[in-house]
Amino acid sequence: MADEVLTENAEGVVLYSADGSSESSTAQEPASGWKAKTQEVIINALSLTGIKYKFGGNSPETGFDCSGFVRYVFHNAANLTLPPTARAISQLGKTVKKDELQPGDLVFFNTLKSAFSHVGIYIGDNKFVHAPSSGKVVRVENMQAGYWSSRFNGAQRLDKEAETNQ
Image (cartoon, rainbow, N blue to C red; front, top):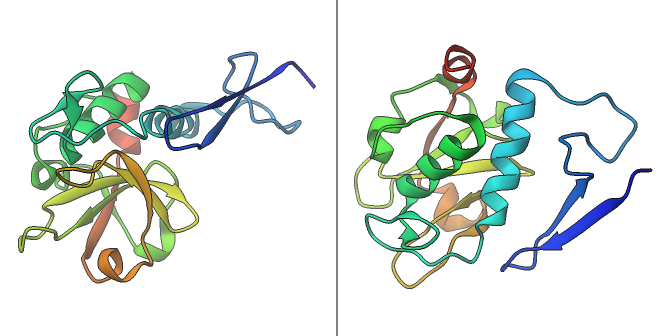
């Protein structure tokens, strides 16, 4: 196998990279199109774990709020410019059922007694990465945990938006 690079982000999540390519560590062919972009989205999102929450924040230097985090990741990893709020982002893409979630899908929650008031990025295995709230940092959460499970509002997939933005 090619030289494998292991890096660990602030949350202790180990990130794998083989020669900086988007190939997986197995003998599969490199991903293309939306699948390749979702891999970049996940890698980019996980690399930002540990960055502090900041209301209105939209960069690693200032910190992130939930929508600022998602906008930053999708802009850098998929060259998509998303609207500034979770509610506006929720109007994009294709609605996805909870049992059909795929890595890179956006997941929405009711955290402010208002539907679609919080957004994160699904990474697989019932987990998502997000910028939670004041005093916390970008981190991975389990969607099956009581707090998140009871507040789940829905999910969207942005594959068509990514294709038209190439």
